[in-house]
Length: 167
Image 1 (cartoon, rainbow, N blue to C red):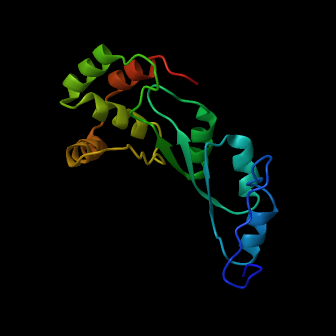
Image 2: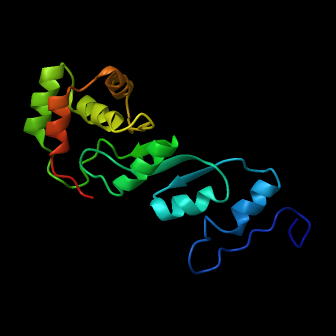
């Protein structure tokens, strides 16, 4: 209760660095039985390892897609350990030129759309990948869902893997 007794107090956040996600608070919450697993976002392997010393990590949500693959070692660690890897922005180019010709060629070969090819490529990266493509319409939800049944052949995967991407 707040000082007036009328409800919880709302203290302003202290300036400075954000709390350490691998610090004492999550460990204390686990000891109290309030959390069983952790989820991390925008992480690298060092914080992942620190978090795992506190509690099992159930999922990692990082930016990852055909055009941007920062910290691929995080996906590798998740794959080895069976941790769900939830990539966001997997359909975005983030300012990079879209390789429209290559995507159109591969999409035509598979009877798919370029967006479906991007999602299928993302899912082919590892069995622990669970993409969360944003959408604003039912048609896009249906298009994105259909990508789960698209299996890219080795030639397509090789061609897509050689496209430039930020790391």
